[in-house]
Image 1: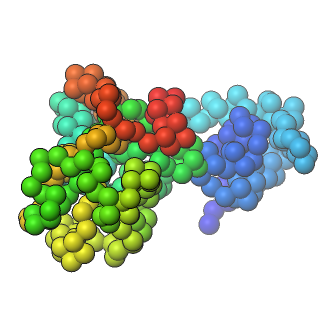
Image 2: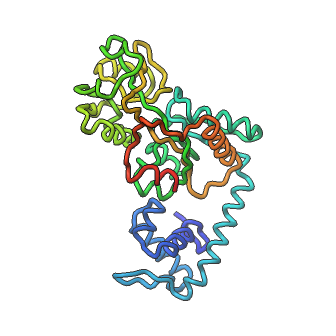
Amino acid sequence: MPTPSPADPRLLRAFVVVAEELHFTRAAARLYVAQQALSRDVRRLERELGTELFLRTTRQVALTPDGERLLPLARRVLQAQEDLLAAFSQARPLLVDLNSPGLLTGRRVLERARELAPDCELMARYESGLTGAAAEMTAGRLDASFGCYAGLDPALRGVLEHQPVRYEPMAVLLPEDHPLAARETVPLAALAGETVYAGAGNPRTPEWTELARRLFRGRGIEVAPPAPLAVGEEEFQRLMAKTGHPVLAVVDFPALPGTVVRPLVDPVPLSPVALVWRKGLTHPALDALRRAAAQLTASQGWLRRPSEGWIPAMDDVTKLLHN
C-alpha cells in the first residue's frame, strides 16, 4: 500500500476534524472511524511534516503553533479537492436510495428532482433501510437516502446531513383473513395481544424496529422476534404468510397479494422521514433533490402534524430533524 503524502486528503481531513473538536473521541465519531485509526493518521501526518500539531494531555487537546498555521492551509486544500470533484460531478449519476420500490415519498421527491434537473442523472437504488443505506453512503457507494435520521447511531449522524421531508402516517399490513382486515382503519388498541413484524434482526433497519418498540410500548403489542432476512418481494411475502404476523408499514406501502394495508389511528403514528446525504457531498443533482423535497414538503403539507398524531420522543426527534 503506498504511503500517504502530507497532502493526502484523508490525513488532512483527520487533522481538521480533530482541530475543530479538540477531542479525539468526538472527532472519530464525526469521521465514523475508530479512535485508534484517527490517532494513527494524525501521528502519520505529524511525521510527514516533521512537526507536532497537537499538545495532548489527559485532560485536553490543543493546537500547537504549527497546528494553528496548518489549519487554514489544510482547509483550503480540502476545499480545492471538493471544488475539483464538483467540477466533474455532473459526469456521474447521483445514487439515491428509495428503501423499497413501492414507497412513494422518496419516489415522488426523486421524480420531481428529475424534472428540476433534466440534464442530471439521478439513479434509484433500494437498500431497504436507512441504517443500511447510511453504511453505503459513508463508504461512498451511495449518495442520498430517506428515512428516520433521528433513529441512526450518533456516529452515523455525525457524518451525514439531513433535511426534514415528511411526518409519514403509519399503517399495518394484514393477511386478508385477519380479523382486523375488514376495518377501514385499525386503532392501535385493537392490536393489543398481537405480535407485529417490524424488521427485528435485520441489520439494515434497526431504526425502524426501534420506532416500533417505542410505538408499541405500554400498548400490549409485541415486536415479532428476528426472522431470516427476506430478500425480494416473493421471499418477504412467503415468510409473512408463514408466520401470519401483521407487518408495521406506512400508508403508501403497496399491498402484497393476499394482504391489505390499513392506516393506524387513535392516535395516528407518524414516522419522521428526512432526506439524508453524505456530509460534504457536492453535486448539482443533490441541489435539485433538496429543492424537490422542499417544494413537496411545502405543497403537500408533509410536516404538518395532525392533532391526534403520535411521534417518537427519540432524543427529542423534532429537534434532531430540524437542527
